[in-house]
Length: 454
Image 1: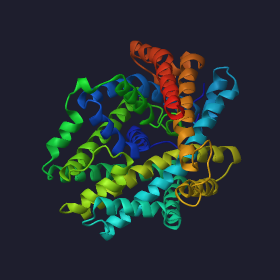
Image 2: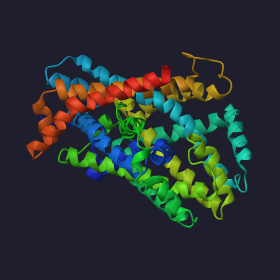
Image 3: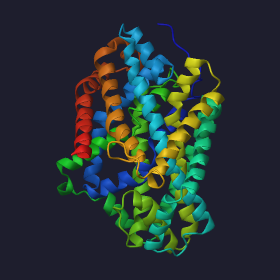
Image 4: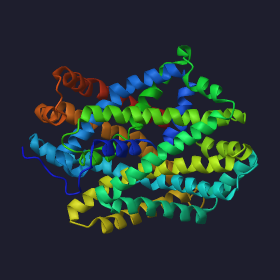
């Protein structure tokens, strides 16, 4: 078949794709969730189980998404359609792309609300609002923010504009230029915070919490937690990796590239934990505070420590950059489809999507105040969108993608796109994608639904 060319452009090189995909994967969950679940589930023993799950679930499916994207050279919707046509399959397979693009858009609508909170805290840290603050005061400030729709609308709007300005620039002038700046900035901020944590006197305690090898703390539930996080951490099932794969250079190795992304994502999450938990322990605070760790516990910690205002500002700036890079990838699939389907320029396509995402986001932030009584399936708008995306759309997207590449797409297409020199490596990947990954994602799907609906 003749090599397709993307109308949107191509990444300048393999490393830009790695940084862009890592930026998509590194988000709010990496900053607080992964370090915490590691410490609570056996430390180093959990990390080993998690890496094993990454190799069996995350990496194989991600390779499948990238190869479909690069083969199709279009938005996720049209890449699924074109590769299905090439394999003599029904065009209905494009529904997998539709589900991914829609999931990304819906996640963006409530993700931008949380990112708005982060922007609010960046400004608050810069202004010194958290100096010498106590836990009750910090909790009160966060509750006051949730009860102030006007403030949340402002920051939500700012974040939507920041994201859509980058997406509007296209692959090279927007996504690539932002990646070249934001990802190095993220790594530098992370290292600065790590250095600061080293001065707290509790660095060893943080390392012990994260890496002490405690296999006795590993349970079947721990394995399921590792399995679920290995899928969700790499932005699978939401069209982002499919879209980014469409811009990947033809001569870049998909297998080696995806392994690098998985490794970088894990390293960033662990370094974030090493930066955060010594600060938490130094102030005798709860490391298991979940999302509250970010908006209540850590502001107290930074407020009480020497130089805390500066490093608190840097921490929230780090979180803001991570949220920004993730949110960009959430809106790229739908933007690419609008450009292809209606022959639009990037800017009007982004304006349409941005306004739509902003409007749904208003309903999400209203869940904490003026729309708190509005329920869908017994949940407010924010929780409902979180539920259907995380528990239904993303696992289904990952499951169907694995089945599509493993069972329906012509094997020769996958072989050609992966260009694996060692046939044994290809066969291992193919068997894992066909038999192991779908079963694992089906387990994630079933258990998440059971947990939420039981």
